[in-house]
Image (cartoon, rainbow, N blue to C red; front, top):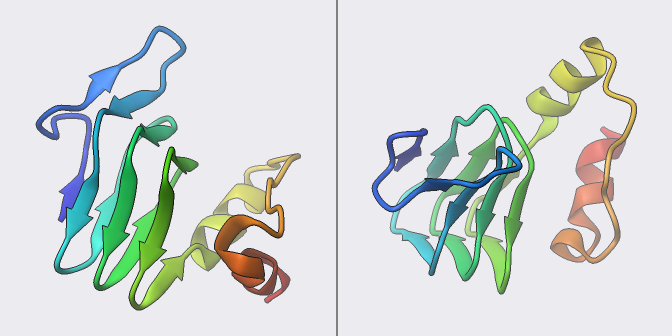
Length: 102
């Protein structure tokens, strides 16, 4: 499943975020290609991987059967002089720090 700015049900908020009310569930992988944050008010769940080029927030939680692929996006953000990475230990039960450390 690919999430772009034309995805059904996606609304652009005043602050530029993309908002999807409810759950985002997929039997395969989810690839998120947006120019700003994706905020899902419910749960994000994929049996495959979740690929995201921007920040993703879920009101209920995020689960990915094969993991959340972030390494290439971290490298890209660093190359473009990103100055802040939010990777609290509550994200993915510490998996975020492990990915970031690689």
